[in-house]
Each structure stands twice: as structure tokens, then as C-alpha cells.
Image (cartoon, rainbow, N blue to C red; front, side, top):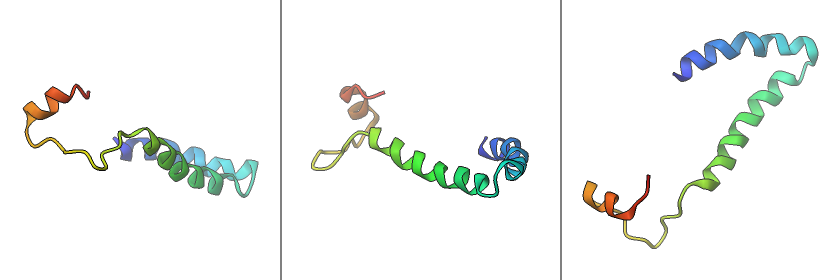
Length: 63
């Protein structure tokens, strides 16, 4: 799935250099920053017991 997305985006990134020489680098720099920001929405698990079985996960109510 990611390979297909990369295949679709690659020509667009190549064309971005006609707009600005730095535009492709900005796009490639923003991707990891967005990924890092999205990890802030992951649930915190520090000092909490982790589930061992599927039943434990179902009891927590996390989807």
C-alpha cells in the first residue's frame, strides 16, 4: 500500500522542483514531523499492566 502511494506521489514531488528548488525537501521533511505528531495520540502505557490475551484486550474496551 505504501509503495503504491509512493509511486503516485513520486512524479508530483519531481514536478515540485519547478515551483521551488526546496519544495521537495520540505515535503520529505514534513512527513516524519507529521508522523511524530500523530504518535502523540497513541495511548500511554507507562506503569500500566499490558494485556496478555485477547480476552484482556476485549475487557479494556480499546478499539
